[in-house]
Amino acid sequence: MKKILCLTWMLLCLAQAGIQAQTPKWVEKAKRAVFSVVTYDKNNKMLNTGNGFFVSEDGVALSDYTLFKGAQRAVIITPEGKEMPVDKVLGANDMYDVIKFRVAITEKRVPALTVARTAPAVGTDTWMLPYSTQKSIACLAGKVKEVSKVNGDYFYYTLSMEMKDKMVSCPVMNANGEVYGLAQKASGKDTLSICYASGARFALSQKITALSLSDNTLNAIGIRKGLPDTEEQALVYLFMASSQMSPDAYLRLLDDFVGKYPNSTDGYIRRAGYYIAKDKDDAAGLDKASADMDQALKIAKKKDDVYYNIAKMIYNYQLSKPTHAYKDWTFDKALENVRQAITIDPLPIYTQLEGDILFAKQDYAGALTAYEKVNASNLASSATFFSAAKTKELLQADPKEILALMDSCVAHLPQPVTPDLAPYLLERAQAYMNVDQARSALLDYDAYYNAVKGDVNDLFYYYREQAALKSRQYQRALDDIAKAIELNSADLTYKAEQAALNLRVGRYEIAISQLDDLIKTNPKYSEAYRLLGLCYVQQKKMNEACANFQKAKELNDPNVDSLITKYCK
Image 1: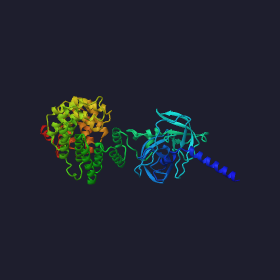
Image 2 (image 1 turned 120 degrees about the vertical axis):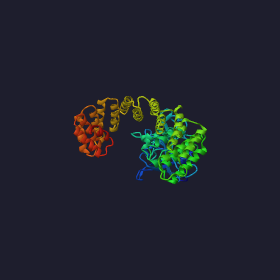
Image 3 (image 1 turned 90 degrees about the vertical axis):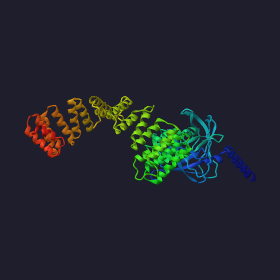
Image 4 (image 1 turned 120 degrees about the horizontal axis):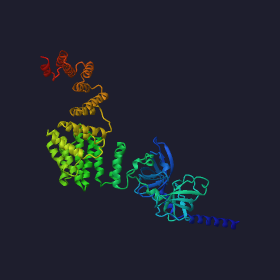
């Protein structure tokens, strides 16, 4: 009996020794990098639970995308029971069901697995580490059955291993204790002997790019996203996010950018601009903007660019007409900053802003000098010539000089002219009218009509009618004024103009009918009586003419006295 008990004890010892020999030494340390994940929906109700593991000591981790889809927040729970929030999603791929994210760790560093650089060979031993809060170092052992290439230099694995429940996204390890895959549950008849793994290197390669804002895979997760890995890409991402994110979300993104790229002036400048736009009458917000401006100037290698941006922000702040100006943020302060920039590097874009600030200060002569410098540079454009033209107009310059600038403005337009730039054609049309070149004005009105594909209003037809009238293209004028009335029948000016035009081309009866209708609508419309009197003059009905002239005089028409003197002696 004693021999039997002794033999049994020896067999148990040998068996235990065999198990310990089969379990790699690195398991006990590696299992501390594996954690549980809990995700929550928008109502803060538990959505899913699963696994993940750290791949860097500063909190970067991998798991399966399915676990996070639809989640608004998530936490991880370490083997020691510590709970930490998932801070940012860093990339995801729904096809291979992987996600990379960062955990807001509560320690200086966390245990992390090393990602294998090479794929294991077919037939080699492999292990899967489960999440466990116990001291047990048990793990699943198996073989690599198949290695398939995906997405260039990355791999997908088939494993000869029976995977237990709730082990999806547990790390799959090679003999050196490096992780090379994330476990994925098998489906079908082979589930008792086969499972699969997405490549850990592939999961680690997932990232946020400048175009990630339109990525449906990432947008299906409500947890905030990280920034691209390069400053250039991150700046593009910021630009796109400014029009797509809520103000609060965009501010968090700006904070992230400043935290990730603390030596980039762009982050401080953009955040200052955000505070100014959001808090133009809030001193606390403007204090933050001012601090960001100061920091940008402090760290800037190219200080002229920062001076320029500060000038532009203060200029725009003043244009927004704040209730109470913040400290010394005036047009003069903006001018001081842009001239600092010009002193360092006299770029045309800085001079353009100088002109805009002087224009806002109503220093039109100074503004014109600045605009002329810009127009003599490689920055000359439709906008800069237009600025010079409007400045000369305010200086009451010769209309021919203004037209010359508008000619340069239109000459710089791309062809074909796009709808957003088409208003420059209207401006030149008016400049042509001011120098009595109505036919040229009519060509610009037609060009505008074509550029906007006929999307015009009643006022456009009225202005074009005036050009057609001065060009003696009477049928065009009649057609345009009729169109203006069709679009806005309440405007009596259009109806009076239509009657005057019919009077001019000798259609007296039509004009009289139109004027009678106009007087019925508004019996105190003095111009209608004057025009009606002129119609009767043409018909030699002087009594009717003088009666209408007298009515116009009673209604204080300023243009009727000379007609009474001429026709009603």
